[in-house]
Image 1 (tube, helix red, strand yellow):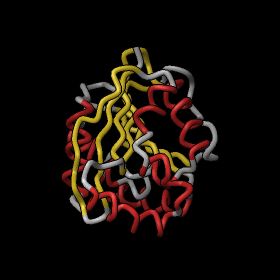
Image 2 (cartoon, one colour; image 1 turned 120 degrees about the vertical axis):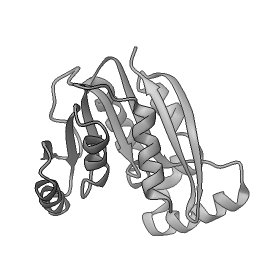
Image 3 (tube, one colour; image 1 turned 45 degrees about the horizontal axis):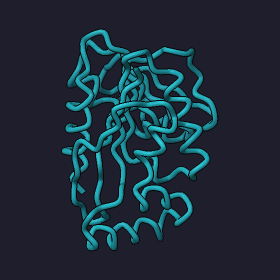
Image 4 (cartoon, one colour; image 1 turned 90 degrees about the vertical axis):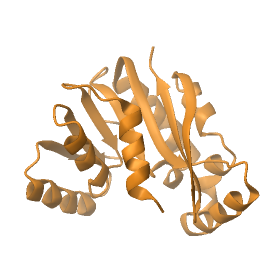
Length: 190
C-alpha cells in the first residue's frame, strides 16, 4: 500500500495556502495531520477522531515533533465546529469504515464547516474499472464489513459528495494497491 505517496498526493491536491484552516477528518494517529503541518507549516491544522485511545497516540506523536496541531475527540455524529470554520477538509482511508448513513451525515457536516470556496479532499477505496482491483477490494470488504464498504465498492462516494451540496466533484487520482483502488476525490463548496 503506497500510503505515504497517497497522502502526499492528497495534500498536494489540497493546494493549502499559508494561514488556511485545515481539518483532518478521522485523523487516527495523526500521520496525515503531521504531514500537512510539515508540508504546509503556515496552515492551522486540526485533527479529529472518535477513538480517544488512538488520539492519545496521536498527541504523543505531535508533541514529539513539537508541532502546533490541535487534536480533538468527537461523538461521530456532529463535528464540534461552527459553520464555515475551515478552508480545507481532508480525509484518508476513513470513509470505507463508515456505514452509508454515517457517510451521508459526515459529508453534510463537512459541507457545513467548510467556508465558501472551501475544498474537500477524500482518499479512499472506490470502484475500479479493473476487475482485479475490485476483487482485491473484496478482501478489505470481508475485514471491514460489506455494509460499510458497499457505497465505496459501488463507486457511490462521488455522488454522495454531490448530494451533500458539493460541486465540481472529481476523481483526481487513482492508485492501484494490493487491497483495491484508492481514489482521491476533490470537491468544492461554492
